[in-house]
Amino acid sequence: MIVSSPTAPSRGHASVYPSLDALLAAVRSCRACEAHLPLGPRPVLHAGETARILVVGQAPGVRVHRTGVPWDDLSGERLRVWMGVDRDVFYDESRIAIIPMGYCYPGRGNGGDMPPRRECASLWLDQLLARLPRIELTLLIGQYAQRHFLGSRRKPSLVQASSLVRAATRPGVAHTNPRAG
Ligand code: SF4
Image (cartoon, rainbow, N blue to C red; front, side, top):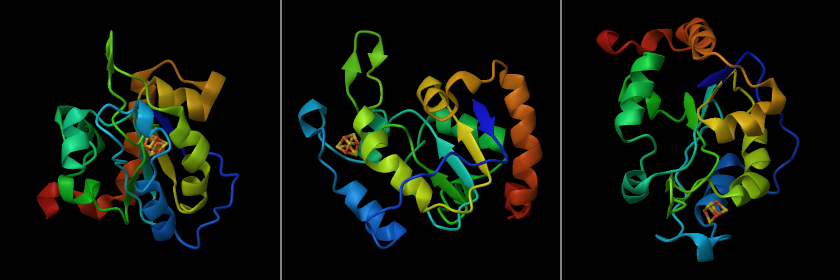
């Protein structure tokens, strides 16, 4: 995982949609690469305009495709522990936006799940980022997110990244300690 902070990802494209909700509705109706998706389109992402943290992962697996809940698996449990947030906070779109590089399950190849479909980023990502003006911290999880957002600026050390996120997330979600209810 790599953390980009405090600078949010580049935002260049204004959206033709009048609001984030309208944009999300359009994304959730997307069928741009339907012919390549073995289980059909089911974009899984969520975001609120007040979110301060952005989680960018790879693409949904089969389980997430079925439930429609992002990070609803063991890797999600590990991520939440690492971030120090419980499910209520993690799935509160007013605080945390979850936008993977590919929004639909891409199917399986020889070495596991296929890479995220590139169409999502080219069609939607900049528009979504333009609608998230308060992002202060971006978690780039996996090579596809890191390549897209950082290019040659990728950091080699997970430890470095972890220390960054600990420093940056705690103040922003200070009231979200699960033990504090
Ligand atoms: S993978 Fe992305 S571009 Fe393709 S249908 Fe799903 S949302 Fe649309």
